[in-house]
Image 1 (cartoon, rainbow, N blue to C red):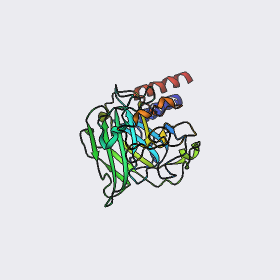
Image 2 (image 1 turned 90 degrees about the vertical axis):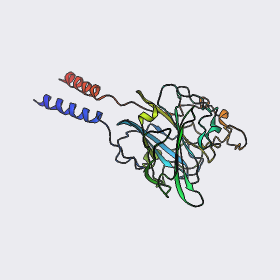
Image 3 (image 1 turned 45 degrees about the vertical axis):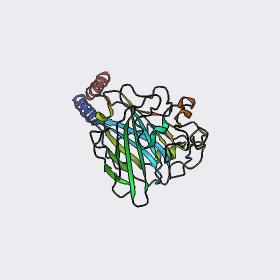
Image 4 (image 1 turned 90 degrees about the horizontal axis):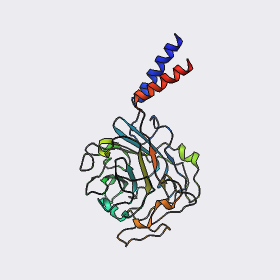
Length: 303
């Protein structure tokens, strides 16, 4: 009798888990079921403590959407948060010139780690434009002229909770949130970051994109994020997955210098030259049937 009750509880519990997690795009991971971080920052920030720092990345595939949570801060000066997503067959191991929206064409020629072939590029930035506070978001389909640009996602605010409209790159709205309250986490510098402090941060940038807008069919999704300057030409040292410490800002040339004149600066950056992977993996959730069968098999072995 006890075994029968236990078996029913296992099946019910596993089926409930497989049905999906709990995610609210509100700029905090508190109350969400992301689980452990997919990547933790390895280097102190060269773009200012609590100004532009990215402590950890969390992600999940659930309910037909990709959920991505990046804990930390995005400086309110229109510095660009770059998010590359590898979610579909094909992709580009070297950044292409198109679509080039928001000036991102200067990244053309950038080479990514082997095994990372992004298909989509999301660009987030915030600041005061001289008249209004704003938070803007772009989504581009790499290697094509297709992109969507959304301005004032949170109205006349630099942080908040909102959603984009629909456009050429996204048939469904992108859910977006940004919470700038973090004052802890990693510190400024170029040395090894404190992983415990990084994983303690709960707020930052969060978004959700329909899988149908990412060309997704099955398998894991890979993502890479980094902090850039206003014109995409001066890369910081804030990447997830992280760079090996000690490491200063990469700049335009990989050595911390700025180049404002070259048509592209991407050819100066090859991430195969850095230890580890500068991307992270969001696994495909196990189908409900497999979880239930696995639970029953475990029960039978114990019986």
